[in-house]
Length: 311
Length: 311
Image (cartoon, rainbow over all chains, first blue to last red; front, top):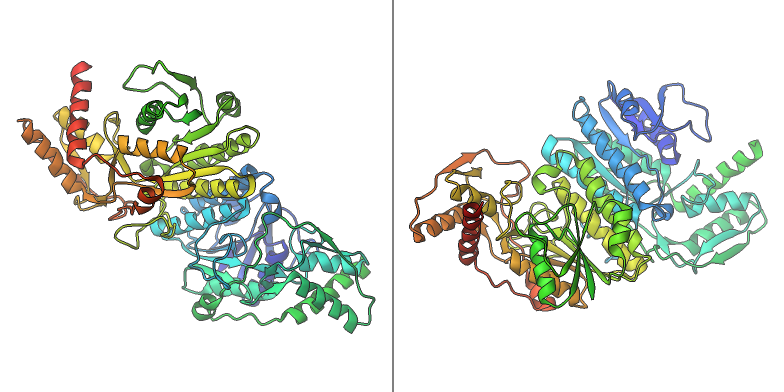
């Protein structure tokens, strides 16, 4: 099976590329630019370009049996600044991709959605896939619309698809830019001796999933006959304050100086708590996350330290 | 209160204009072109142009206290042919409108959504507003996305809004083009002595609401403090075959020749049955539909007959 991996040079994408190769699959990556933290992989075919460009897509789709679509032109914290760009860059591009797929032999599609935004304000302690979809930011609204177009494509044209509603992935190769996730951002700051910045009082609870666990789930989704939506988290919550504590403990265990923490006001679009119920992925896809938050944070810390000492 | 009525020259819009004027409100209509079946109304201010054009919108919004948005560049039966045009013409235009509104004094918004498409395949005999939103056509997907952006606008910027999920409106001034509804289309054919065309076996059940009842609900939604989503139907179902029978009875009562009926294959995107639970609109907005299907069909038949005899 040959897989087109859209967004395969990003943080999650680089790990999904590894997992697809581990599974013995042929991989073609479509992304705007090469990976930030590794040289190109020898056994991966790269196409560089915009997945919103039909000519690029057409070239990238040739001979492909399945698509894993991880690309996003926005992140939750920035999509509201320009919802029209969010709609054009993500929704319209993906709808065009689905139209192109109809004329190819590709009948399997895995899409990375967002468990942290599609549900809006959770009505339960842990949120199952059947929870109402009431997103309160543009990122989540666009993800829901894409999920719906995938559902329609399956109903009308038989495209077998899996939607993975990921929680907060973290781990090695997470960028330093501060738009993608508290763990990565904080570790880059700590290693560089800068203070960690926390929005609000740190009581906000999220579900953090190690990026290698998520990548393994992507592969399971791809090779399984199951279809539909699956939550892709750890199934347990951790507050921002707990994350800060775990980072502090990592420093302590390595005999390093403690970091400092600063507080800035909370964001209107942050929901107070979101933890995903991952029963469905466990039962239908035989997947369980393996890497604990402690291990993951320690590993990620070492990875950031290596990046900085090698730069 | 001055109301901008977007799409005010269309079938539903023309009746909402009447109802707003009856309520003593000032009305400005924005639409692409004048009404098809009536001369311009003396006490309505008209702006002709595309609601997707920001300059036109900016002009139309001056001095307005509330917006009733009924415009759609697509209908359920055609949106799938070009989903990208559906997204651009409806979703992006409406998101731009919401952005423009933030800088005006307008803080009330009534939006006409689609009870027949947002729910997808109904899981209950009558569908309440809390039913899952799982649309299976582009029209419904775009409506859900617009509803979500309205919800976000209320959460983040305080825009008070009502979404009316209309079922199948029918009545005088419904066009003859055959894309908008079985009752209007069939009556135009019958009056002209042409056979009525039915998709499938005629067992498909829909919820038909008289357009004047729907228009009254629009006004109630506008002047009420209630917000959120409301089903806007009759609350009862009628099969296509029952509609055909009622039209036949109308002909019989008027001593006219019976019509002929032809059958064409069913459409993949038609759900077998959809009837809306309208309890919420009754309780929160004090609205009950008044016009029975028999009365409404007889009235609409006379209206079509007058159009043809006057043309």
